[in-house]
Length: 168
Image (cartoon, rainbow, N blue to C red):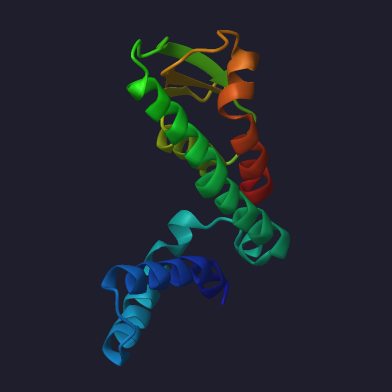
């Protein structure tokens, strides 16, 4: 029963991904999606889920929904517009460099989500991680602040707020 509880999240996620990528909701795809999701979910449950009770906490799901809306419709749009501005500007105003950005999230999922959020946002790329010092090294297209706390405010603070509430 405990393994099935751990497998619930991976099963649901695998099924959603399967149906999304198949692009079909025919009976065949639904049945094969359920079978694939059950097999994959049961195989990976012990590897990817340590606390299954977190999967069903509604406040975490609400924070995930809020984060998704913010990330895709605010952060991504602002970052894309900023990069477009830099590309189209006649003098191409860039000030690239690598900055140290501290983080305070605890779980591997939170660290991964935070790093992915930073990297997938145009203008920033996580190039290294020092887990012992809790620092990301980030290439930034236009450095606005070289201090670690200042860079954190500009780059990752809002992402970190959401990832803490979702995963920690």
